[in-house]
Image (tube, rainbow, N blue to C red; front, side, top):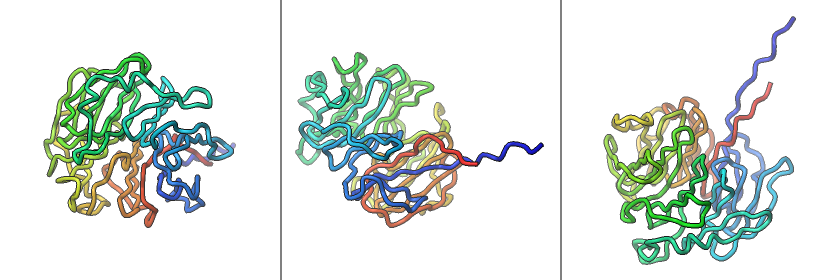
Length: 311
């Protein structure tokens, strides 16, 4: 009697770009072709087109679900407490059936008057994360990380605005909250009540992207917003060991920052996209990489959906 056929695990990488959602490892026609896909949920099932419409991926493809009210959308996340969309001007909406409803409590968040960009422009929502229990974390640029534990009714700041956070994520198993910020790597093991900032092992502190691959932190760092010397760093979650620069299969230095949402991971799979549209993949939690795509349009975000299998 023959044994079961071997199941081959396939890593699917989605890259949201200025010209649709691309599959660099497939080379097929992009989803949402002709649209600037300004945000992509880490699960790869939700996207924002042209800053104005929310789309959900089903077996039939990308389907429009709702119109974004007010300012253009800049970030989104789907979690236990719903689908949240953040916008320019630092506003927040939550999906209610087929409508995005403004989260008015966020507009009254304490400390909002201190939010603003270094060049004097209005703040925006740069990234979002939801903990398994439903606590929502909103990274405002520039406004630190704001938290709601009651479904968006009330909000509270958790960190100094001047830390200049660029991305927030949550480790689901432990509830640890992690950030990439201008001051380096930040970690909170108590849901944002307190933070520890660490730069050990980094060549410079300015960090833009962060992801978790099989209990390893992947963090990008450079010497500033207009760098020509950015790198990817790695270290185990829950340790104080110095960050180690990743070199296997990657350029010695990236010529531009690897921006927020440009590093993604699921299990021990990880992916990274560069300003020039090169896509790299890792199957060993970010220890080694290979280039799997190039020449993509302007990247906006990256996602690795749940594993797919084929016989």
